[in-house]
Length: 556
Ligand SMILES: *Cc1c(COP(=O)(O)O)cnc(C)c1O
Image (cartoon, rainbow, N blue to C red; front, top):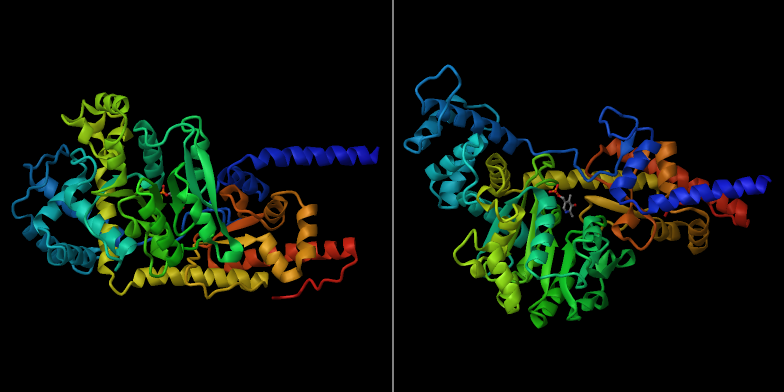
C-alpha cells in the first residue's frame, strides 16, 4: 500500500517534470520563481529572492541618457520658438537656420548640468571626427526627439545610420580589414531583428519548409524554437560547442557547414549561455568554408560582442555572406528602449540569391513589392526586411520611432568618444568580479585564463564540474538519482535562488545558467553558498547510498 502510494507520488512528480520539460527556459523561470515564493510576477521589491535567471542587466549607461534628456529640453525650446506664443500648448518644428548657434547658447546657459558636456563632445565628434555637418546632425536629432515626423528614410535616419555604422565598425570589425560599405536597418531590439529576418527569408524563398539550417549550439532559445514553428518547418543540424573544449566548436563540427544541404548558419557570438566568443581559428575556418560555399547564408547575433576582449565578428571575416544582428539592450542596460540593428554588406549573397531565383518565384515577388517601387526586382534584401516588417502595404509608415533612433545615436556616440574604453572596462570588471565571488563560494575552481571568456553568463555544468570535484562515480550516481531540473527547483524552494536550465538552450549536460549581469556581488556569494550546500548534501547521500567516503568539503 505504502509502496503504491509512493509510486503514485513519484509518477505525479514525473508527469509534472515531463510538463516542465516542454517549457522554454524563460517560461520555466516563472515556475522557479513561484517555487521561490516570488509569485507569478517578478517584483523588484521581493528582496529575499535571488533571481539570476534574467539576462536583463542591473546596470545602465547614465551619461548618454543625461544627454538625451538635455537634448529633449533644447528641442522643446526650438519647437516653442518657431511658433508665435500659443498658451494652448501648440508648438512647431525646429528651424535649421541658426540652430548651431542657439545650441551653443543652450550649452553655455546650462554649463555643469549632467549631459551637457557629453552633448558638446558629441556634436564636435560628429563634426570633427566624422566630418558631418553639425547643423544637419542637430536638426536630425531635434526633429527626431520631438517625434513630429514619420521616420524618413524608413530603414533609418540618414546621419543616424552613418553614426551607428561607425559604432558597429569600431565594436564588431575593429582593426580587421573590411572592404566596402554596409546598410543598416534600425529595429526594435534583437527580438525584432530575428523576427523580421526569419520572415523575410521565408517570404523571399531563401528558406522554405523542409530546408536545412545549422545552429551553433548551445544557443539563445528562440533560435531553436522558431525553426520548429509551423510557419517555418525547417530541419536543423546542430553544431555542438563542448564544455571540455572551452565551449569552442571543433573543426569536425564546423565542417558540417560544408554540406550543400545547409542553407544558412545561425550563430550567437559571444554565445548565450556559455558566454564565450568563438576563437580566431574557428572564425577563419568558417570563412574558409564560406569561400568554398559562396551561397551559404550566415547570421551572427553579436549582442554580447562589446563585453569581449578584442572582439571581431564573423561579419568582418565573411561580410558578403553574413547578416549582422546587434542590440543595445545588454551593453547599455536598455532593454526597455528596444534598440537594435540589422546590417548587411552592400554586396551580399542574399541579393545575389534573390537574383537567381526561378522565374515563377521572381514573378510572385515582383507582384509582392510592386506597390512600393517601380523596380521591385532590384529591391535589396534589407529593404525587403523593412517592407515586410509592416506587411509591405504599410512600408511608408515603417521604421523605428525617431526618439529611439536618437537614443541609439547617443549610445553609439558615447561609446565612440570613450577612447580609453572606461565604460567598457568598468562593465567587464563588474561582471568578472561577480563571477569570481560566485565560484569562490561554490568552492570549485574554474579556468580564468581563457581569453575567449566573456562572463556575461556562466554555465554551472553539473557533470563537468561535479566530475572534476568528486569524480565520475559521483556524477553518474547523481544523474541517475535526480530528476531533470530537480536541482534548480531545490535551489528555488530552499534557497530562493532562481537560475535558468541550460538544457533549454541545448546544452549537452544538465546545467544552470547564472546571469552575472543582474545581481550584486554579495548576491552571487549567497548563490554560490546555496549551490555548495546542495552539492554537499548530495555528496552525503551518495556516501550513504554507496558506502563511499568522498570528502564533501573537498575543494578543487
Ligand atoms: C538578449 C538577447 C537578444 C534580445 O535582445 P533585445 O534587443 O532585448 O530584443 C537577442 N539575442 C541574444 C543572443 C540575446 O541574448
